[in-house]
Image (cartoon, rainbow, N blue to C red):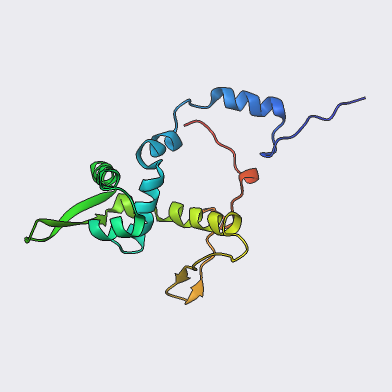
Length: 163
């Protein structure tokens, strides 16, 4: 009698998955990214930046963050090249914070987080807003797509390999 090996969500046997995990790097890009952006206030600042909010006073009003927390997170985002600080007024040295190319690359992550929140945390009332794809005018339903084949990506269809 043969025993059936249990298959994990990634389609591997439990032994194959354990062997692969043993080879996985202990420090990866997720950990490195979280060192920079893994904070509630950082995500909320980025959300506001993608909505076009650039000025400190507007960020503070919209977020309700204490001045020390907001200043610290803005400083971190500037230090890491995600935002750039640009003077917009000589009167009282006023600055605004603009997304850099590095910051703009975070947009898919913010949109997918929004979609997850809409699906799992929006409650009975449903999502509070919709994103509209301007070129076609339709409400956006973000999906992760494989660049090579165009298929939707789900965790069960992905494996990792060391580089």
